[in-house]
Length: 337
Image (cartoon, rainbow, N blue to C red; front, side, top):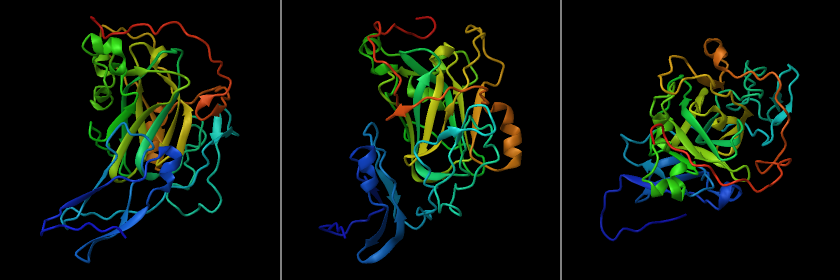
């Protein structure tokens, strides 16, 4: 029991809670559920707390409203305890297939295998997983050893509606190429993190793209965090179009640090004219739903690799990666600079 004593009567409308955050592994020691009371009167009888993200690049405190008009029910349906390494041979051919859920998971949210098992980026995807923190870990690029980027990223809820994303609930490590001293010295670069959710995605205008330093020995992460659990039916992304070799080629996705996807991402078209506006749909979809209408609608946007090589990782670092001294990182700038 933790008590807070006020010297005089004060109106408390909300509480902000920072869960235990000693790294990704240590964050599992955090508190899962609490009861909040004011003057002995239960205000929130049962509150599901958000697991910390294991990083400190953003304010990970969870705001809990206490007034009846603001307080909402907090669902407690956990996602299935998927194994962390889910790449196994795909019996349908073409890439890899994820492992099935752990034994005893049947009946929980996200346990079922989606009908898109055979072609969802080479992995089994859980059905409608739920959690507080979505994390995308970028594992490889389409050839560039220095930078990686995206045109855009969108999450969709159980009603197939886009989940709101802004600077208050999106972070990245590294944040963008603006962390580089040489970029900061010239006044910064337009390819900042906010371009991921600015809604201008089918474009060759790099002022609407996100770019960040890439190192195969370091994790590049995009983190979306919410005060209440979200349920995901689909993730849609647009790969980096200015220089397609700097796009994401392989990534892993997590909800509350439980892996829900690991697979390949299609390279952006390489024959686009950067001086003209794109008149094509460059989006790619990863489906976490068994809705046949959604599957049919997104089928052409789902990456179906014909031959994906097997990559082995240790702490998200390729074990066959040979560390070598690379030349100095080349400079980069938006068009016209």
